[in-house]
Length: 324
Image (cartoon, rainbow, N blue to C red; front, side, top):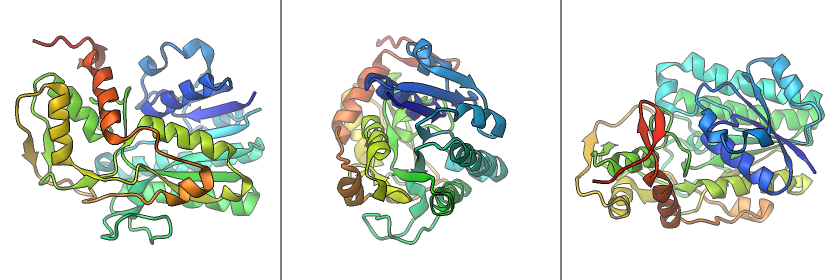
């Protein structure tokens, strides 16, 4: 039985990872400061995990959290392009300084491997599609710069100290437990909850921008595979996606059917730092991690809408949706 430390365990992805690790029979230790994570995400598993309410910027807390840990799944971050544009210093502290603390603590505790939640934002708006890991990075926002810098720290700790690290560049993860009220939340979570309540969603830009939307189960699978993959993956960077892109207008059309929404969409101005098109080449992850997308976009949307049908947001808390 192995012990996994999950940073940002109360978040959308972190809490999903915790459930998966428990399901495979291993132990979970989690750390979160609830700046973006929610206690509700851990409600039914809280007694099954060793939870520490702390900040990854607290090195002493990280040292204690890493004691007797086999694997670290580093998810904690401020995952927002708009937020980073408004507060680049805060984004850098959480996303870079926090990551260095995680690495130092993991190194000193002799953790077997650290798997890092990197970001496809590193590619920026380079016109070449699909995006592959050997492409030169072109970050467009302070968030993208911070996530890329953390990648470089991951790779450097492998080369300098022998700490095995794997970076997973997530492409637009979506699914249950993603908080649509959060300014950090993805577009699909916001669309779904607004449309279920009969409210028009907003597309910033012309709606032709496309994304390689990736259902949460695919990201969870990639993390667990990255922990147990052969040693030759250490120091590597891998795309985690589906290898298919869908634009926002098409996403809206699909969701309109799934949610029984009868209205239209609103359009707003483009947002600073946003990328126009994103599509991943996942062949590297397929070859070296054994990764395969296990849930496609449409099936992921169905699962997500089904979950949100009984969830709505009322003053920041989940409540039951009642359809008219």
